[in-house]
Length: 266
Image (cartoon, rainbow, N blue to C red; front, side, top):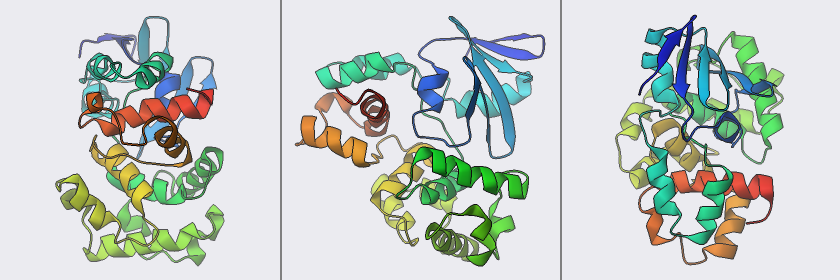
């Protein structure tokens, strides 16, 4: 990944990368748009302000070390997404989705943060999820780690206003703390086996487990299905995704999900 360090910022060429497409497509809930071309957000306790111009992406107040150790991997900048889009475009529906939001990149996020975040996502909408996670981050002065949540009770989480989801957080923390489930070990398993392990947590079903695997473990064959993707599958792919998708089902899902959710029609 080629980049320029200038005036305390890191600048990269804007190739197959749109902040709107990437940070507002449902894969993370900690980014806020603070102006027409700038977002502020975080991964765990690493904060960032990032902007885009017509031809560049600017990582503000970011050192070379921070860029190379955190954000280069987080934004999956070493992956050439044009390869995926070219393959997907053999299918007319996916071609439309890729052309509509060609700047989507898959964020490589922390597995624990994704587990907690997507438990909160159950039967919920993105604005409410963002508010719950914002309360959590504000309370703990950053996204809490497992140790900070180790003895938490449902009552302790009342301030989040997360409803029935609080008991699922408690169960997840309990199973992780006891060692019954180890996210690093889960990450190393084949996708079907990893899903079986994650679904041992109460409230973690097929959709949440696939989200955790895709966004928190970079298992690009994971395929989260919510109401939007279900609509696409029923209308365009009743017999499954086209052959051109290959093992990159999760990346194809991101293009389809963002298009159908924001355009309504394919």
